[in-house]
Length: 502
Image 1 (cartoon, one colour):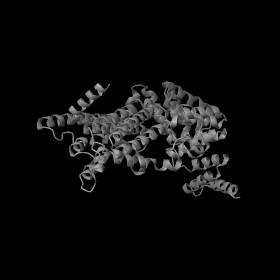
Image 2: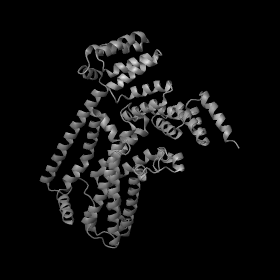
Image 3: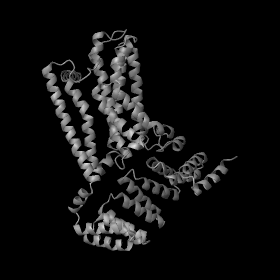
Image 4: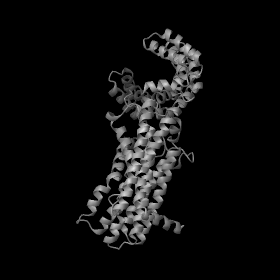
């Protein structure tokens, strides 16, 4: 094993420029890959980015491996008498281990362990984790932005700080050792971009990103930390042995990454590396352009969508459905129903036409017929989230809560970020007396729709039924802040406030 490790180090040192370029471009290629899966195979993308699925499990493995390697590197430093580097590496290892265990809820779901009462009341996901505590959640996005920015750009000021004359050798050596190379910045930048997007409503584009899009960025962050620890170990290996007072000048330079991929190279080799870098950049830019074009076609180009549907749906069915949509928009529901019926006659498995017909029947109060066509839409397209949600609404109105809950959950399985499904599911669960689950889904609703006063009021109702009166009062007040004329919330607040008085 040691021989393999030595050969690997030799190969990396010999091809360090290419390795660093590949590392720099890898996250960009990975992001493009995730975008391709999201655009073309959205169900697969949603599945792998869910809790306890591929992406989150990969994060745990990366963080855990990084913590072990950092601890081993720290132990090596301490054995050689380099106290500062050793302590810093052990602290870093502890932080990485903490994050890795948070990713799997400290094994709670793995071992089906219960959640302590305090965490049930204060944790957004009702599990034993620190990062999902309500006070932490409000700062988590900012923390990701700051961490990603620090590890992306620290290498720029680090080289100037380490070159200063005021610091002793040991501090300079530590700054050099713990400066992420320029080639790792693309592993850390994605979390900066995605969480800045969530933090700044002004730059948000409707349906461009959902909450689960953070998972690929977090996976790249975890891989970035793993590679950073590996880079630190390689620097220590290259530096060979540090003197008790700090690095020698020669070893200090060996441990510091060059400022660019071609630093110190002869001109002919530098030209070859730059040509390779340019070629990779052109390929990635072309791939990005193709994906952007494809996204625009699928999401926004109505003509393309029309042609795409024509290839699988008879034109007569499309024409009837389109005409029916126009009639429904004009309030001519009865005429729209006739056209929707003609559409489903032309193509019996036309999911959109069944769904639209169900909406029209529901508007007319013909709920049994609406239910039949919601079910027909789902039969034609099993992951039709809106059809599941509206079918569940109809079933809940008939008092069939168990069946309604099932379809709300199927809607969320297809579209985890569908706020109305979370809200409707929470209402159904509250009606069943399943208050803990109801509270969870009200909170998920508000994560997606923080402007929904109804959700704050109903969340407060559920909290009050649990005896969590102070939390209920806060949520009633938030509902009134959003809608000062919300009479029901004001009435509920008055009642619960009286119960709080001794």
